[in-house]
Image (cartoon, rainbow, N blue to C red; front, side, top):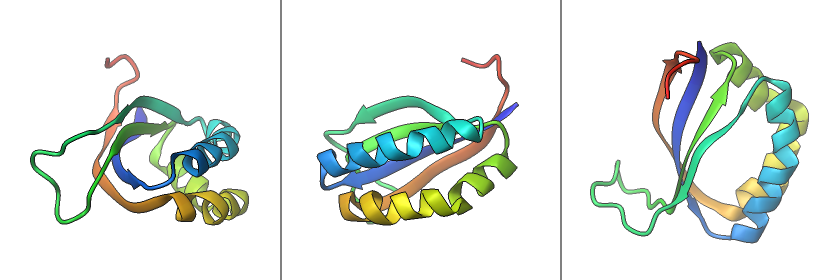
Length: 104
């Protein structure tokens, strides 16, 4: 089993957001995490609330505890402040779920 989230973002600065991804990915990997599907969205037909999104991706961890540790990691929080907060206007967690490792 792994723990996965489907996330929607409103990315307002793609270059800075890419720097965020590059900086945080080694920390994510150290918690057994990574990215699955990743796509840019041109039109949302049925939004979840009032937040605009233009990027959708899955992010996974070896388990929920690893996810909680990752998001609380001091170095991750510095990276988030430096890059994420400048490049993303809004975030929505569309879904979160346990996933069997053999699921496609």
